[in-house]
Amino acid sequence: MKISLVQPHYFNVWEALGLAYIAAHARERFRGRLEIDFFQGFFDPDDEILAGAKDSDLVGFSCTSPAFRHAVRLARGLKKLNPGIRTVFGGFHPSAVPRDCLEEEAVDQVVVGEGEEAFLRILEGDAGRIVRGGHFRDFDRALPDRALVKNGRAIDLCQRQIGRRITSFASGRVCPFRCVFCAEKAVTGLRGRANPVREREPGHLLEEIQRAQRDWRLDGFKFVDATWNTSAEKVMAFCEEKIRRGLVLPWEANVHAALASREMLRAMKAAGCRQINVGCESGSPRILRDMRKGLTVERIVQTFAWARAAGLERRAFFLIGMPNETVADIRRTERLVERIQPEVFGITIICPFPGCDLYDPRTMKDYDWSAADEYTNDCWSTPHLSNADLKRWQSYLMDRFPARLAWHNRLLRGRRPAREAEERL
Image (cartoon, rainbow, N blue to C red; front, side):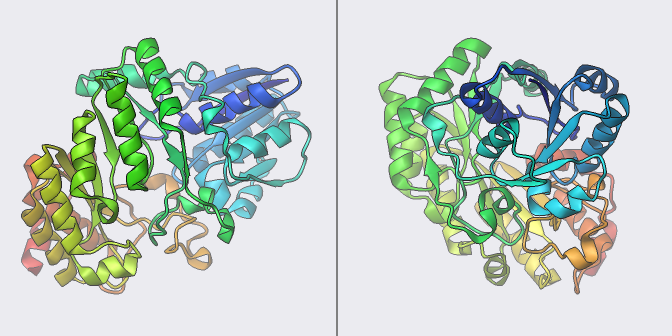
C-alpha cells in the first residue's frame, strides 16, 4: 500500500512529530507492505505535494484549525487527479469538529483523538467515517520516524534563523490541566473519558535524544509537552539520568508554575536546562480563576524568583481576551510583567479554536480559521473589549516591553497603533 502523510502549510514550523509517531507505529504493526511519503506545506509547494501524492492509495492530513482550509484544497486537488484516492483527516481540528470536517466532499474519513492506533485500523480496513483513537502507550517501543518527516529541514531552518541546531521531543502525553482557552484536550481528552498523563521512561527518552544528536548534529533541544513538569519524580529522574550519561546538551521546557519548586528548577539547571517557558496568562487572580489555570499570581512570582536564583532564563507568556476581562485586569497583567522581569515576553489575543471551551459551534462554525494564529486573530471580541480594542492593547503591551518580545510579537509590533490604547488609560 502506498500512503502519503501531509502537514498543511502554517506560518511557523517544527518537525511533524505526530505524523512521525504515526508512521513509525504503522511500519511496525501493519502486516502488509507499506510505502510512505511525507510532504510539509511550509517547505513543499502545492504542485509538488499534488504531484508526489496523487498516486497514493491513501493520503493522511494532520491539521490544526488554521491549516484546515489548505488541507481541504489539497484534498480536492488530489481527488481531481485521482478520484479513487482515499483521504483521512486527523489532528486538533478534525478531532474537535469531526462531523463539520466530513461535510467537505473531499474528506473521506476523520480520526478523532490520538492517531497511532486509529490510523493503523484504517490501514487494516476500518471504513468508518469517524475512527476514534485510544491511549497510545508504546512510547518506549517505537521512536518517531524523523527521517521520513525530513527532520533536517526544520533543524537547518532553525540554524539559519537563530544560529542553533535544535529539534523537539515529547516526554509523554496529556496535560493534567484543563484551561478553557486550550484545544489540546480535543486530541488527548477523548471527549470526557479518563485519559491519564503518560510519561516516557527517562533512559529511553535520552536514547532518542542522543541518537538525534548524532544523526542531526544537534546543539540543543526542546520539549513540546504543554506541561513538562507534570511531577517532581519525572523531572528528577530525567535530570539525574541526563547527568549520569554525561549528555552535555542545553535544553528548554514548558513549565507550569503551580508544579514548580526551588529544588526542581535547580535540578533542571544542573542538567543543562537553559530556559523555562511559563504560561503565566494573566496578572489578575479573577481571570486566572476564570481560565481554570490552577495557578495564582503569588505562585508565578515565586517561580520566577526561584528560576532567577537558579540561573535559568525565564520566558513568560500571557493572554488577553477572556470574556470577563476588563481594562483593569489587563493593567494587572502589565504590572505582573514589570514585577517578574522575564527575559522574553509574549502576549497573545485569545482565539476560540474548536476544541477549547470558549468555542461556540452555534456562532463560530463558519469562521475562517486560516486568518488566525496563536498570537492574533480578527474574530474574537468580548462584552468589554472589541477585537480592535484587544489588538490595541496587545500593541500597547508590545510597546511597553519592546526589548523582551517573543519573536512572533516582534513580527506583529508596529503593525497596529498603540495610541488609542494609551488614551484609554
